[in-house]
Amino acid sequence: MAAVLADLERAGGWRRFMRDASDAPDIAALDPSPEEIGAFPQAVLGAAFYKAKMGDPGGARRLLQSVDATFGPEAECGADLLSDRLLVEAHVAVYEDKAFRAADAFNLRRVLRWWA
Image (cartoon, rainbow, N blue to C red; front, side, top):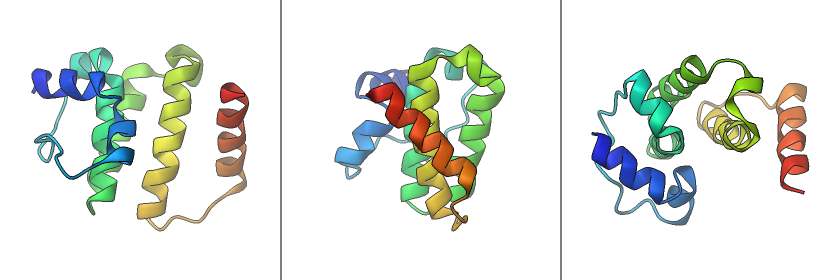
Protein backbone atom coordinates (compact mmCIF):
# COMPACT_ATOMS: atom_id res chain seq x y z
CA MET A 1 0.00 0.00 0.00
CA ALA A 2 2.90 2.38 0.67
CA ALA A 3 3.83 2.32 -3.02
CA VAL A 4 0.29 3.30 -4.02
CA LEU A 5 0.31 6.10 -1.46
CA ALA A 6 3.73 7.31 -2.60
CA ASP A 7 2.57 7.43 -6.24
CA LEU A 8 -0.58 9.30 -5.28
CA GLU A 9 1.43 11.73 -3.13
CA ARG A 10 3.72 12.51 -6.10
CA ALA A 11 0.70 12.94 -8.38
CA GLY A 12 -0.75 15.73 -6.22
CA GLY A 13 -3.08 13.91 -3.85
CA TRP A 14 -6.67 15.08 -4.19
CA ARG A 15 -5.79 17.40 -7.11
CA ARG A 16 -5.04 14.36 -9.23
CA PHE A 17 -8.68 13.29 -8.96
CA MET A 18 -9.94 16.77 -9.81
CA ARG A 19 -8.28 16.32 -13.18
CA ASP A 20 -9.08 12.66 -13.83
CA ALA A 21 -10.48 9.87 -11.69
CA SER A 22 -10.83 7.30 -14.46
CA ASP A 23 -7.58 5.44 -13.78
CA ALA A 24 -7.51 5.60 -9.99
CA PRO A 25 -5.08 3.38 -8.11
CA ASP A 26 -6.47 0.59 -5.96
CA ILE A 27 -7.58 2.59 -2.93
CA ALA A 28 -10.97 1.02 -2.29
CA ALA A 29 -9.76 -0.85 0.79
CA LEU A 30 -7.27 1.78 1.93
CA ASP A 31 -6.73 1.67 5.68
CA PRO A 32 -3.48 3.59 6.20
CA SER A 33 -1.47 3.35 9.38
CA PRO A 34 -0.62 6.53 11.31
CA GLU A 35 2.92 6.23 9.92
CA GLU A 36 1.61 6.08 6.33
CA ILE A 37 -0.69 9.03 6.97
CA GLY A 38 2.22 11.00 8.39
CA ALA A 39 4.41 10.16 5.38
CA PHE A 40 1.74 10.60 2.68
CA PRO A 41 -0.93 13.02 3.94
CA GLN A 42 -1.76 14.40 0.48
CA ALA A 43 -2.30 10.86 -0.77
CA VAL A 44 -4.71 10.12 2.07
CA LEU A 45 -6.60 13.35 1.30
CA GLY A 46 -6.65 12.22 -2.32
CA ALA A 47 -8.13 8.89 -1.33
CA ALA A 48 -10.79 10.67 0.76
CA PHE A 49 -11.65 12.94 -2.17
CA TYR A 50 -11.87 9.95 -4.51
CA LYS A 51 -14.01 7.89 -2.13
CA ALA A 52 -16.52 10.73 -1.77
CA LYS A 53 -16.63 11.20 -5.53
CA MET A 54 -17.22 7.48 -6.08
CA GLY A 55 -20.12 7.30 -3.61
CA ASP A 56 -18.43 6.33 -0.35
CA PRO A 57 -18.70 9.48 1.79
CA GLY A 58 -18.49 7.37 4.97
CA GLY A 59 -15.13 5.98 3.88
CA ALA A 60 -14.02 9.47 2.92
CA ARG A 61 -15.01 10.82 6.33
CA ARG A 62 -13.07 8.05 8.08
CA LEU A 63 -9.94 8.95 6.12
CA LEU A 64 -10.35 12.64 7.00
CA GLN A 65 -10.70 11.70 10.65
CA SER A 66 -7.53 9.63 10.42
CA VAL A 67 -5.64 12.65 9.06
CA ASP A 68 -7.00 14.75 11.93
CA ALA A 69 -5.99 12.12 14.47
CA THR A 70 -2.47 11.89 13.02
CA PHE A 71 -1.75 15.60 12.68
CA GLY A 72 -3.66 16.94 15.65
CA PRO A 73 -4.63 20.59 16.04
CA GLU A 74 -4.65 22.90 13.04
CA ALA A 75 -1.58 24.79 14.21
CA GLU A 76 0.53 21.63 14.04
CA CYS A 77 -0.20 20.58 10.47
CA GLY A 78 0.93 23.66 8.55
CA ALA A 79 -0.99 25.98 6.27
CA ASP A 80 -0.59 23.93 3.06
CA LEU A 81 -1.88 20.70 4.53
CA LEU A 82 -4.59 22.52 6.46
CA SER A 83 -5.86 24.33 3.37
CA ASP A 84 -5.98 21.06 1.42
CA ARG A 85 -7.71 19.40 4.37
CA LEU A 86 -10.36 22.13 4.44
CA LEU A 87 -10.95 21.91 0.68
CA VAL A 88 -11.34 18.13 0.79
CA GLU A 89 -13.62 18.54 3.84
CA ALA A 90 -15.88 20.84 1.79
CA HIS A 91 -15.97 18.30 -1.04
CA VAL A 92 -16.80 15.39 1.27
CA ALA A 93 -19.50 17.44 3.03
CA VAL A 94 -21.25 17.97 -0.33
CA TYR A 95 -21.42 14.21 -0.86
CA GLU A 96 -22.72 13.76 2.68
CA ASP A 97 -25.53 16.25 1.89
CA LYS A 98 -24.49 18.39 4.84
CA ALA A 99 -25.80 21.92 5.13
CA PHE A 100 -23.28 24.68 4.44
CA ARG A 101 -22.65 26.46 7.73
CA ALA A 102 -21.08 29.77 8.69
CA ALA A 103 -18.02 27.86 9.92
CA ASP A 104 -17.65 26.28 6.48
CA ALA A 105 -17.70 29.68 4.82
CA PHE A 106 -15.14 30.94 7.34
CA ASN A 107 -12.83 28.01 6.57
CA LEU A 108 -13.08 28.51 2.81
CA ARG A 109 -12.30 32.22 3.23
CA ARG A 110 -9.21 31.21 5.22
CA VAL A 111 -8.05 29.02 2.35
CA LEU A 112 -8.53 31.86 -0.13
CA ARG A 113 -6.44 34.17 2.05
CA TRP A 114 -3.62 31.62 2.23
CA TRP A 115 -3.59 31.30 -1.54
CA ALA A 116 -3.74 35.05 -2.16
